[in-house]
Length: 123
Image 1 (cartoon, rainbow, N blue to C red):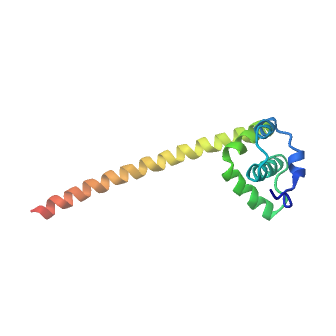
Image 2: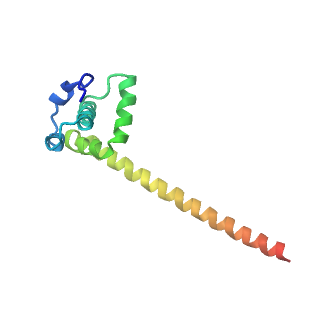
Image 3: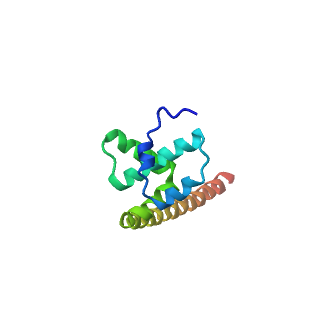
């Protein structure tokens, strides 16, 4: 196991009960230690925001990779933003449903036109 590049300062400063509970049962192997570091950094950015462009890119990537953990951290550490995120997701889902409904209607219209064309061609 190589711990040379692991920054345990993030892990030492974890505040989230969710992360502490998740990590306390983890076996100390390379994969889990890497995961601990990632989640600890994610918690840090949830609390403090990223400090620059590179950190922001890394933060965005980790929010996607660890979506469930990200939402749990937000729920615990920043409930106001968590509610805003849920509201945004609900709006996005509604917009996607509307677009899917529109696409389905367009498909039905196109299919009807194709059926008419096929009848004309059969004559």
